Length: 419
Image 1 (cartoon, rainbow, N blue to C red):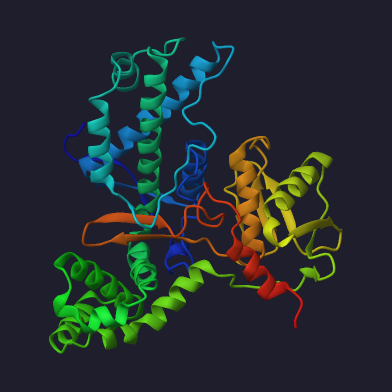
Image 2 (spheres, rainbow, N blue to C red; image 1 turned 180 degrees about the vertical axis):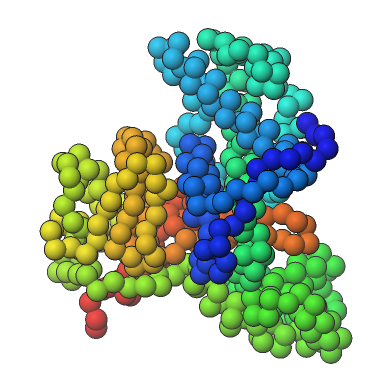
């Protein structure tokens, strides 16, 4: 892959996008499927004007990876048309999330490098079909398990390449979003003897100093959004052996930034709570078919419960309800804001798929006022995007997650009976 600059179509922002959006312009969780990524990219390009400009070879290589990734999925579909039992690159429960302790970093360069490394390990038949353009075979390459493993790895790189393409018009926005990187506060908040350690800074091991410095600078950045200012003030505090005061100066803002990404932010007025039965209730406008109504009832009531406390959320279908679940073909599922009333779901998506079931459970969390608890920003130093999920076991952070006790506690605090 490679070559000199070529003349191709490049995204350019419409004049309507001149102002910066208040929330993340790309609303697509990190574990979306490839088909979801494809739909999202198509939707974005419909809102983008095209202009002819000269583009670097790196961008062309990423586009080639996207083409190969699509061919990978199309070949799998072709193979399955000739099989009684279909093959799949993914299996239920295979999602591992992107933990805050191991963030994902990606860019055009990193995506190209990952694909080049992987391409050297492909089965010969995969190289011929996917890279050299040979016609699809009706049977999967042998050994099939190895084909599926490698196909899944190609698929993941494909998703990353699409995400990188989608980010291109918004890199300046995501650079500013680095101010919401809460890793510093997250790691420091549970260190019980932090004050003692900071007062005794000179005696700390070098590796611990390096970690604490990085985290405290992160807390500072949550407030100032200025690396140079933070580094200057840190150096002064270190010289004076006053790093506890430095930490105290910025921890409040860092804490509030964390809470805005994690805690219930926008309580509704149409959630009732029956103390005698320990249940909450919310009304939704009736669905067009019994199948859709059953889908909502089953998934929402199955997820939004906390068995340890004997609590559950019940759904009622009422014509006068504020909440509507709207089904539209090809749409990226979303809610019109925290505490919003409109839930948009893709009517083309099969209701039997776990991804679809997880999506309605997650999106309804937004209706109840919970934000997405994941972070994504552009690191201008590394020229790469960085993302992570605050808690990979949490429904609002990851597709690998479920409802946690903190959701029940927050629900009770905001919607439960007053003392």
